[in-house]
Length: 319
Length: 319
Image 1: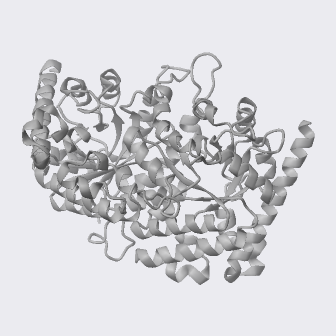
Image 2: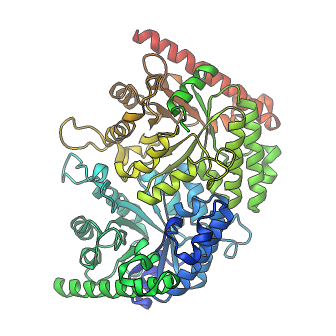
Image 3: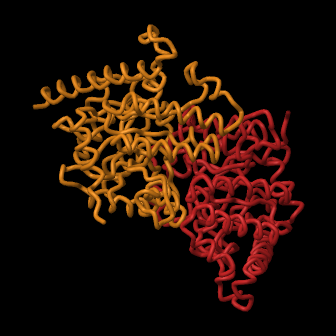
């Protein structure tokens, strides 16, 4: 079965929703709103996992018409052991049922058969899609860490050939990203390490450029680094960007506009805590914790519109 | 509760067993011996997970007197979704019940609360140790990927303070490790990236040097790179090394001796496929697939003795 390239599916979905927002699903139990706090604070993993499921499904229902893609943070599900993974599988299925694409934010990176095991689970078909195979999570794309080199990407690339996508960590949004990622590599060009990671992604994805001119292997570039993002965008016009760090980590629409290509395409901007826990913001205090999903929806509309406006200005300025 | 430093626990266990061998538990289903192959080839994840459990427990029983530490590869358990995690938790508990230390080979790396979620699960106490807390896997140590920088290590270091250990990826055993890890960083010293990763680990672990002179934050250095290993050992006398790539990946005792310090301590040498699937080697064909665990045991004794001899020669040569 030939599957449409991930890059084409994502770009079409962004166009249909007119939204470059990626909803980060970061179910951090300590931040859950009052209606779910009792379940979330349980030391019984099954009970805490049920809080995550209710939270994630309510969030998907509230925001599914506003975004094309969601990014569950695998760590918060893994935190709960087996019951957490049961719920992650249900959340991915629920997102698909609502027509959303799913990026598993797993940041995996390993070699050979080990990398294949991660890829086959996270990107492998779920039971509905492949009833006669060992089922996987069925995510449409995932984040990967390429510190181990090009051969560590190969098992993941096999899934790109069947319609999945990858985002390779290049320049992450945290302050510590300077420690290794900014180190300048000796030799011609004197580029920082993150530029080499981006080049690795570009090389790995060169064969996957789809009908809409974008590769199905992209990079992660933090919204907190607009200069680096601009330079990477100029160097790699066909690489899709996943841009975390919007909102809670301090970056706004002006900082993310440079991640988009001259057409205003080729990037998605993620917000996790800023959307999931919008109810904690003074801006939405009027809604109270009971209407936390409404706060998330209101925040998502504001984010979408602000980024659309910033992209529009950016496209006009560049044309 | 104060816990003995991981480095001290590991060194004492290595001394007691007189074995620097780390048993890598890589339950790669396609390689399972005939007695378990029928279960291992099932597309029902519960059934395949039961094959992994039987395999791992039989392996632990066969080798537990020959090694101080085991390293389950998390990816092969994650491959099976929730039932795989159930079995991983049982395997860790079974290893502890046999007096073994456990290194979760997870290669996680993320930031802030996300890194904390990984650390709290993988290194957090299991239900037996902390009945009133949200239970974790209870591994004694884990592997981490520091591409995201020093701040990404902090949530893991909180567990080092309570007796856990970390191994930061420096120079991995695969050929592709040259792509990023060998890039030479501009500036004084012109050191390769992997040396900077090792320095990050040394800095993160500086406060954790135990009574036996070793830090509880170490590095991963592939057995396939003896020159790099020698240089790192000379630069970082207190860093414990986890040395993968022995056996199946082509390195032998001569290549790993340089990872040990002048006392013949401070390193563990891992073999995964070479031990788990020793029954496939021509050396053990006489045993046949039914006696696969006996083949693993025989191979482990040979590996232990060969490394002990190589360390002895190395210590004599250096003194």
